Length: 251
Ligand SMILES: O=C[C@H](O)COP(=O)(O)O
Image (tube, rainbow, N blue to C red):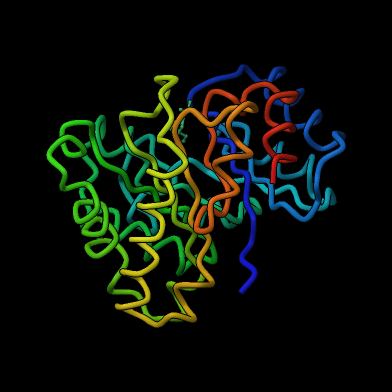
């Protein structure tokens, strides 16, 4: 089965307005493989402007970096899934390790975020990944599979088919230390098998599983060439159009 190949850039809390618009304009105008679904996860304050800017650009989409687990209410400073849908956002990152760590987002909370995203026609980019301590203990495979179990396995097969999974070992995020292609493949294959067991082979084979953690122009090709790696969730290297375009074109 051919799965969607995806290059998603997570800008995190970077870029002022002018710089953000310039970056999205550069990506819109770049010569890039339009068969690769390219997603820019921008700071929420710029989402509407960037959605409008790239509205008719083929293969280029916009994601939010988070959403609240409730539809609406007294949650000062938060952004809801219906708000994102109402401005034309189609994707939302859920469960990034930085949200899990700094905002204490548990697997249970993330399950609710996945639900609310799907209920509002947003495609969740669901992040999972282990710390260095867990990797060293040798329990990383079951630990990450359990993150999927607790946040995704309540979904119907139809709902799950809409989800994009992003495996990001925490020890490789922003550290310059990438998981080896073999380590990435091992985890992706394990997760795909777990999904096949829980749902079906067909469903599991249709799900794009992205790798994230120090993906750069120099290593993107070898990582993306692994059988079960369907693209990347890129932090630092997505902040420079030139670098990110090289990553998009590395498939
Ligand atoms: O969401 C992206 C990841 O946290 C990876 O970040 P990085 O490419 O800067 O290591």
